[in-house]
Length: 233
Image (cartoon, rainbow, N blue to C red; front, side, top):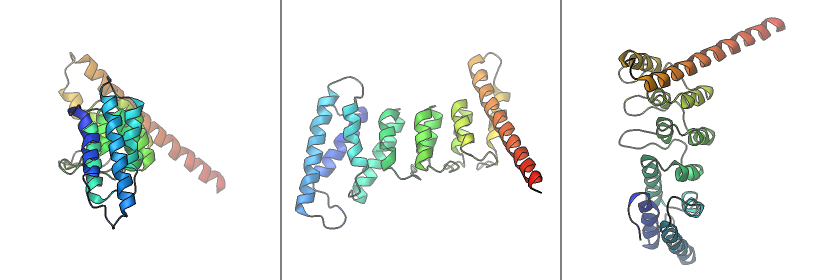
């Protein structure tokens, strides 16, 4: 049995469920037995998949049944959410994406205040980011430094994620704990970047283009709105 890396998450959940934790309100013995059977079946399937390389659809499907269960008690829910963040830290976004529907929209990691959206934009995971936004993830939520997902996306040079957030109406005027805005961070990065850093310069340029496009869209929408209002009058 593999016990390293991301495989710890499903195995821990199996052990937790099969060990007989009390599930909130007093569940019937039949219900508890059913959950234990689910855990045992899940562990067998996980071990079979672990012998293969990479992540298979079977592994993803088996993970999904736990995160969407409405009967999980708070202790197990905490383990599931912790496992979700473990997947993000290990860049296993393909698996994590299948779990989004079972996670709270405002899920936040305690130690740094990071949200799943922040992990997604830093790593440039566009599909993951879009699915979180559709799920209702708070776009302008800040971490312990006062940084938003937009700030993380911009300073990481991930222009496509910046564009996704801006189209979802991410706020550009929020200031972090140091009083800096997202554009302030970008301008500082540009000043600190040397001409020799061609790739990084190109990424920062793309970020600036995304902000410029956003300003153009905003101006165009405002002009269109004013024009329609004038015609009505």
